[in-house]
Image 1 (cartoon, rainbow over the protein chains, first blue to last red):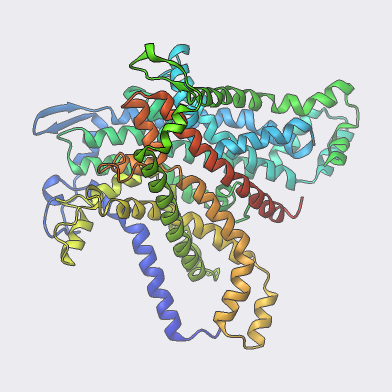
Image 2 (image 1 turned 90 degrees about the horizontal axis):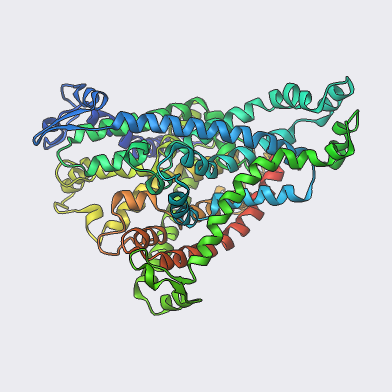
Length: 285
Length: 308
């Protein structure tokens, strides 16, 4: 394909530019909005020339919004903190549960193993409400409604299949001979796992952890059903925010920017592993 | 694999018992979490066979398949089936065509193309619920930039998600924005992993490019296309976040997809039995699809991991 004509190159360039505009413009526009006051947002025609203000962000961070109807206290920072806590704790728990299991599935062929692995995989594709609605009634009886522990447990539905299947692939790609040699040298099984297998699979474990974090962060439906305002992550919190009266459009935009910035930054950082992670290891990036 | 396991375990394994129990011990914690989640699943099956309304506890009783039978003559149910199928078909169809097109555009691994493909991942990493809010701001009738653009084209009263005629179009747009990069990135990885030889031979023989595309590229890419589409179809038929954040299933019942409908049955009409029955039907659909999917996915996975 080296003898492409100039015309073709130009058309390709234009098409790629259009694609980039469609997919990046919304993010660009919301970021612009977050630095504007209602006055400049409501201008017609819209313009990208305006005097930027940080007032939307300071209002969100201090939690005091001045509206036409007086002062309004909002807990957006609490939502942000909930997202950080829920996502990181869920991923941590998932790694503790998932990495040994992934190792077992990769190294040993045992009857129950494949069954567990596929059951976990099928959770990835089952309608979440099917589990969540009965669970919401159970949680009430167990006193787990609106607790971090309850949410972190249910978030395993998101993180565990991801970690299990990605990390399993990495363990399968490591030759068992290295572990064998280390065992011959007189080390215990646990030492071999900890000092040889885990370090060798580390890139995979890190990638799976980052992706699981992104998916946990982006989840909406779990907390919508199982958490009230004070435990809700940003995805649910931001929706309540929009429907609250008197909030300025720039503040909504700023809340969205603060909510999506962490996952976008992580995704750019971990982009090398995204393809493999998104396809649960079916396609190598 | 068994040989590999023996290799690791043979030297100095403390006891036969430990050797046999080790894999189970390692996966036990994950299994326990599974069981905790399997219980609600069976509860849901049971609920779907009950007359069970949270606001009328006295009426609770076992009614076998009446919830399901009632669906047959229920226009709202058939609307849900129709809307879900149309939503899934439309979104995945558009995403597949667009994703394939973009993957072909970015096929050459140049520096520019690689940066472009990374930037295109950003929508995919945006929470769908938040993406819906972003588009809601952009389609706001008072100040939305998109409302402004279409007004320039002469549509001064374009109401996007609040008009039943354009609601589906609007949520499809959001879905396409979020998920096209998923198909694109999988197909791009697929395209770049295809063997070079058939293409070089075709170029030497001066085979027309349309022939190369339809007879070589497309057939070789087919496993990737099927995997990516099934993956998306499974998610799309259960779409909740985007529809709920954007319109909560409205206006009217225009966007009452399965999960939104069962959410409202449960929380608004407190009809647990009906809600559970709806979800079981959705689960049956996704179960059939996911079995086809998992077969495809395992094939690709084996290839990616060198047939291990």
